[in-house]
Length: 121
Length: 107
Image (cartoon, rainbow over all chains, first blue to last red; front, side, top):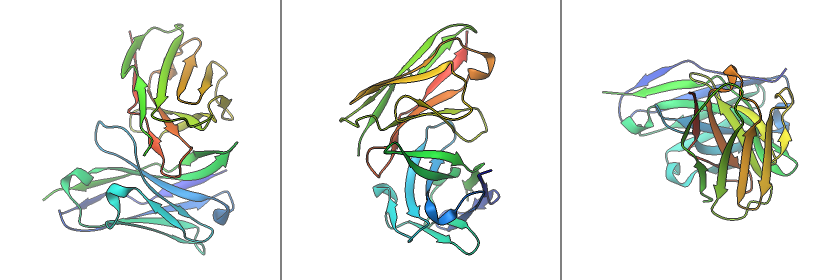
């Protein structure tokens, strides 16, 4: 069965960086992309960007351009999301999700369990 | 970016009720609209893709409709496990966007 297992919670100081991992299993990793979505406490879902596990192409949300980098390691079927220059409003649960095109619609059909990143001095 | 607007933002209903949530896109997205359910402390779960197709394993009391800019999610007879927050998401542009969510609460 498809599973996405994320790394554990992190506490970071403002200005630091965080790198969250997402280990995929149960499907052919290179056949799908991975999107990252975050959710601030009590708030809605915010799409952060996407990476192709086939060729490493990326598409980042404009507001995060320059601060976020998404990568994959096909040898370990793991995706990574690094966010730099952390601010207090980056405090959120970060999710990875498998991105599929189903009947033409870009769909997030499987999700990781989420990783809480807390930014606090 | 395509803006997605859901209504209502919150909704109180009783077990057995029929409930409808709407989602409007700022431009036409054809049928490239998905619905997710999220329970507290859990990851979102895909319910409906491509506006009206039920994801495998999702109960048939959930249904979706619409195309262009206006979409609806209907729960035909609310069950206790359906009280959650629901999000729409456009899958038309590669930069995905979500609605702000609709919190469905027990009356």
